[in-house]
Image (cartoon, rainbow over all chains, first blue to last red; front, side):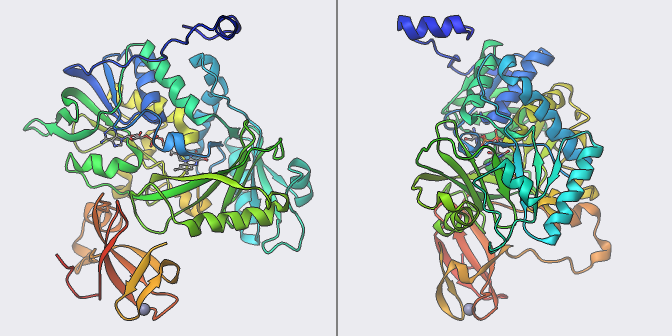
Length: 415
Length: 90
Ligand SMILES: Cc1cc2nc3c(=O)[nH]c(=O)nc-3n(C[C@H](O)[C@H](O)[C@H](O)COP(=O)(O)OP(=O)(O)OC[C@H]3O[C@@H](n4cnc5c(N)ncnc54)[C@H](O)[C@@H]3O)c2cc1C
Ligand SMILES: [Zn+2]
């Protein structure tokens, strides 16, 4: 079924039930490609495998429900103004795909390029952000420097008073950046992939990776039985270390809880996304009216899928300082996701030492924005058995060669 | 917030401490003989288990000393803390 004005009206007025948006088949005995993890990245990978590479005998296995991992837990900030050329190419590739994604998938992912403004609070911040602006422009990516007055004009509720504990000395603004609806991204890719023949199998946890004596992957064991596979692609975010250990691989990853929270819904008050890496707060307003607030990770590795209250409190203090008018808002919900963090804060996309095993992970605190681009280049990598040119620098091997893509030093955090 | 027992000072709230990463990763005794893969393993590879994890903490707002801790990364429950040089409890 295609969504259109006509089909929406027919269902709204006629009261006809909406059909299921994707099939829920029983797993088959064997697939060409088994993808572990039905988050946005895994589902996008499946979709592009089927659409661009004719690989349709694909299963996406999900231990919980699709989109129930970090995809459905994130604060949806989308931007591409990363410092290094390799990252800029990757995230800009994704941003270009976001721009046409709703039409492409015939599913409203509510991509809203309302601008992402990153606040500078110190001389160091100013220098780093200006360096970003110049580096981005050399790569053809929009990013501009705003004075505090210009920042205030772009975002009126912002407190630009010099009395602030960490006064705002300026901001970097990417106008094409913004937000999208996280669930819709997972659902849209699931629907489109399913229509092309991909089997999405929920409540199916991969518990072992089986290999032939030569070492190549042969199958996965799951809570719903053994499934043979010519290729296995792990896209398991916070659980990647656990999945890769099933193939005997130790990863350069640590898993941390990352939290977010939302306020009660209010009328439109915040026209853009505002981020402050220095005092650690980021905030936007959903179309429902809730303020969507991102906090920091806990200090220690954990799979608890919750975070310490003091972490959320710290972020709220920063938000109240930046936006005094938000002080009386009540918070409705908070939650955590488990993010897989690499030493250089850049993702790992590509081949592994185990033949037939591929990995796409390490997106840490900031991979939602990359979902379409990540799926696109990873699908090409899995289909061809060699890295897509944009993915090539993000190899697992870079930790041995030392060719790190150090966005950690560049940005400290990378939402 | 965790309640962490410093082996010297006793139980204190988490925000008196700084997390120090996975414990018992020893720097190679003969650095010159290590190849790139061995360095990558020392610097970057982490066990990151879903379960028992031996980790370092430092009591920065207390005695200032490093110590080790065993914690379940699913429940965050701490089963032991012990001084550097001591072997992890089994
Ligand atoms: C609170 C929070 C805020 C964030 N904010 C932003 C933001 O503003 N902007 C941004 O760009 N990014 C943000 N991120 C990061 C972003 O959410 C992730 O990088 C991205 O969603 C990862 O997508 P994914 O598809 O790889 O992972 P996920 O959506 O986590 O999917 C992985 C899936 O694998 C499944 N799985 C794991 N193990 C197994 C197994 N053994 N068998 C079967 N299935 C398995 C999991 O259940 C899960 O559904 C945030 C993350 C969090 C937690
Ligand atoms: Zn102490």
